[in-house]
Image 1 (tube, rainbow, N blue to C red):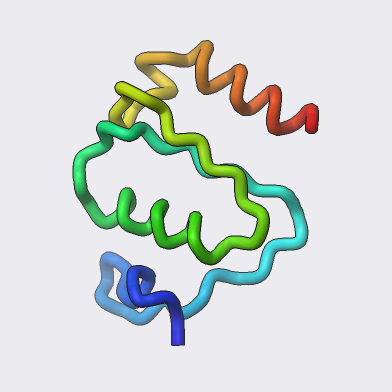
Image 2 (spheres, helix red, strand yellow):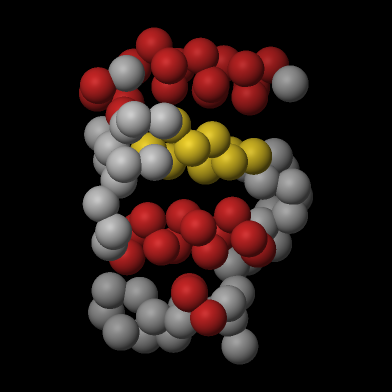
Length: 82
C-alpha cells in the first residue's frame, strides 16, 4: 500500500510506495505552481523520501528553470557540492 497521495498515476494504476533511494535527492518546486497531479505528487514525495531536500521557490510557477535559471542553477550547484 502506497502513500495516499501517490495512489494513482495518470493511467489510473496504483503506484505504491516510491522506491527506496540510497543517494541524496532534491525536489525543486515553484510555490505558485498550479494545483495539478504533479504538484500533489511533489508534496507527497517530500513526505516519504528519506532525507530529501525540498526547495519551494517563492513567486515561481511550474517553469522556474525558464523564468529564474540562475536561482535553479545555484540550488543545484549547492546541492551537488554538499
